[in-house]
Structure formats: structure tokens, C-alpha cells
Image 1 (cartoon, one colour):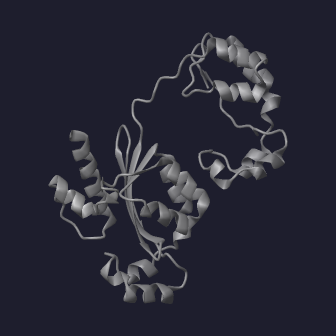
Image 2 (cartoon, one colour):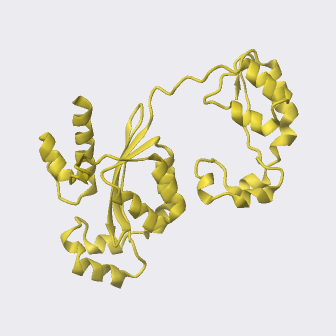
Image 3 (cartoon, helix red, strand yellow):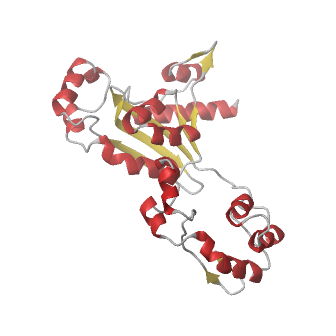
Amino acid sequence: MHDTDSNAYYNGGARPFKNSASLDKLQPSDFYNSPFTKKQLKAFEYIGKMESFFEEVFTNATSINPDAKSENIIKHMFGPTHKIYQLYKEKATEPAAPSFQPTLYIDFEAMNMRICGWYAELVTEDETIVYEGIAKPFSDSKYVRRLWDRVYHELLTYSVDEICESKHIRSFERYFIDMFSKAKKIYTYGDTDALFVKKTFGNDLYNFFKIKNIDASVKVANRALSLDRTCKLFGIHIDGDLHNPKYDTLKMRACLQKIEEL
């Protein structure tokens, strides 16, 4: 919080439940957007013990300008008859709608539904952030090489040595959580990318991903066109290797741009 009259800044954290064990009942994905871990939240003081602090700050404020709609949070936290809620309701202004929503465009490559490569572009108001990498989808390198020899040497642009020498995909879980958290919308071409997330990281990260995920595929008579056919339909040509997540992401973005121009 920033008090513009005194130029004072207030920041901190609090435990939202009186009983710290209540945090154990939450799903791991409930903590993804929190800057604090469950362990840190358990160590914090209960929010109810900070009533006098919020009451003083809200009393001294001429107006309260929230970044987002918080009335129900304040009401649920302190109660509808509490002075803190009454002060907030009286002084809070309507938060301005965000002028821009960060959007993530991403494509995964996988072996037996486990992610082994990716390319993504996070478009923010000020810049485009690129994420790309290769990972080892299974711990057993012999198994990875067998899959490669049987099927994936014809489908992937990575070499089997690059895959086997990379970090295991599970070590990237926090990396993807941070990436997904920064986006308001996540575009993929088709729904298989979401299934790759589910198979690789489990239901929690999958559900977090699906809340924001938009399938950008073009459908005709209830059948989805392949990305390459959609590019032909719109007259889009982008040079690059087949099954390369970078070029598939660029193709998807080009198709979405064409759709916006229609």
C-alpha cells in the first residue's frame, strides 16, 4: 500500500486462516499465484490480529484506490459489519480495467505425452519475452533412445543426445508455473498441449493451465484443421522445420492475426 499524502509504503504478509492447519486443505495450485509458500504463510501472524493496522490506514485515507476488485475479500475477511469493511466500502474507488492483458503463445513437443521441448512468446504491454528449451522426458536414457529409434527420430528436430543430456522435465515445474502465472491468456493450437502438461506435471498444474488456455485451432464441420492446412487456408508461409515448436508458435500467431483482420 502507498499513502500518497505521507508518501509512506506498507507491505507484508499474513496467514489468512486462524488455524494454520487449514492451509493443508488447499490444493498445491492454490499457492501458484501467491508470492509466499505454504510454509511461509503458516509462519505469518493471523490476519485478524492486524485489524488495528488496517483500520488506522483506512481511517486516515481520503480515498482507497485498489488495483483490483477487493470488496468481497475485505468483507469476507473482517465481516460485513466491521469498521474496516465499512471504511473500504465508503472510500474505495472502482479499479480501472487493465489496458492490456499479457498473452502467452506456446507449443510443446513431447515423447509419449511427456514434454521434451517447448517454445513460447509472452506478449506484455512493453515487450515480448521468449521461453524455449529442451528437457529429458524420462529418467531412463535407454528408454528415451528406444522411443527415439522407433518413432521420434522422424518427428522431432532435436537430437537424441540433446534430449538425454538435458535436465529432467520435472526440474522445470517452477519455471512453467512462473511462466503461466504471468499470462492472463494462454494460446495453443489444439488441445494436446494441455494434455502434455497433465501427463508431465499432474492435475494441479494442468488445471491451472486450463483455466487460462484457449484452443486457437480452426474447426470446419466439427473437425480441427491442422496448423499447416490453416496456414495454407490463410496464405501464410513461414520457413522453418516441421515439428519445431518455435515455427509452430509463429504460425499460430500469424493465423490469429489473420483472423483478427477478417
